[in-house]
Image 1 (spheres, rainbow, N blue to C red):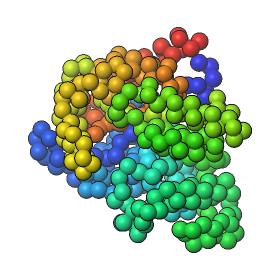
Image 2 (cartoon, helix red, strand yellow):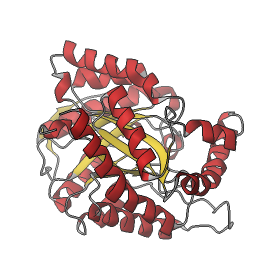
Image 3 (cartoon, rainbow, N blue to C red):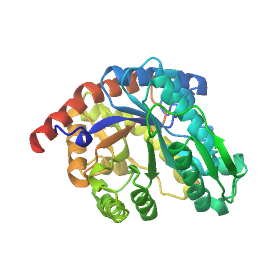
Image 4 (cartoon, one colour):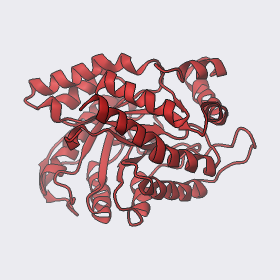
Length: 354
């Protein structure tokens, strides 16, 4: 794979979970989880992973309300790893401040910052920042338009329906990267895939259930929309984000990852009217074609290679962890992902795609 654009990037995503440990009952403070995240990013950089992403949530069970701040704390201690939100809830934020935060991060990291913009899977930020859910779609469309205008021009003139107009004003600091990468994040919405394609923006699909191969029609929609808008689909990046964990053995990985995953999925399930999350559900999802990437390095690598073959992705986020796990276990999983899984994936793809 001599073409760098086709290289399979592998990284970590997290929401900075801060829930009580389901085994010990001990609670992790937000402050401790934030400090742990910085250590995780530094380790991920050391073991050669490509990207680390933090999702924005405004709930007591997550510490990631300000991803750019946490990423900036690690930026000066890392050399190569890319640093991104996963996601920025753009609908309830100010695009000017989003750009400024991530262009600042881009400066500190010397050109390693990215923004992943989405509407978010939770709604707490809307009342918190004074927005109506009735404007859910309109807010995102309008604010994405403004964010891209700021990214592409130092001086901005813009008018919309949900934010005061801007008349020939500069937004600073400017990013090191030109342009600052902006991704669209989607949980599987066809309109999101089409929008990203039309804009020529890279896309990240959150695949946390079912079979990843079922996202193939969305990838087709994305590329088709890009081509119709005059963009070269082969030059666009596609990422996926899925829950998972790497252990010394597949059995160990499953046994460590299941209790916190079950606890948090049942919390969310009660909020959304889902059925109980059981060990049978978990075990089915970690099958070869399932959406859970849980196992020893060889098995997780096999699943990532299959994902690449089915969807043509060139970036994979392993979401560690779903519920609170001991920091040492998370660090070991990151180490295995970087030193064992990634080399196996790259070696296999070099062989099969040569």
